[in-house]
Image (tube, rainbow, N blue to C red):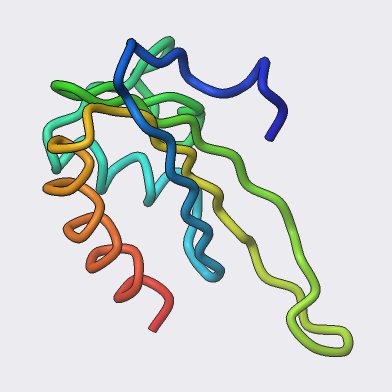
Length: 103
């Protein structure tokens, strides 16, 4: 993800990037909304590229990647920026949801 696509950060905020295969951008956006975020620029999770919450923002992107041989999967990248305390609470909850999705 280029710097132009990353969500803006406030002073003192940190950045974290998490990638998961086997989930969709729609599902990642849905999880983030369930964790207190709001879609930015759309009402459709399938079209969402940004979700903002209290003390955090996330840019979402998806691409097809080769898993093995002719097998390809969708890999969703969630680029988080936020207050360190907000991210410390959010990231484990997001990881738990996203990890279960592919299985």
